[in-house]
Length: 88
Figure (cartoon, rainbow, N blue to C red):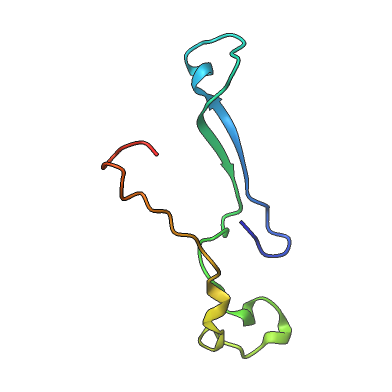
């Protein structure tokens, strides 16, 4: 996830595996059971008006920012063949 300038980068690591939880010693494979997520408090939580970002944008309120700044290409995943609560 991109973050603004010097804000902390988003970090995600495996904290525990199913094998560790089951007490397995030296498993051949580890499957993630719990991830640790580290991020700054403002990461992905809101949008600041561009005039909040730099002095050269003074007077540019959020209603003047083009909608194209708020979205990008996406993908659509079709899981219609899955049952409710079925693992993917």
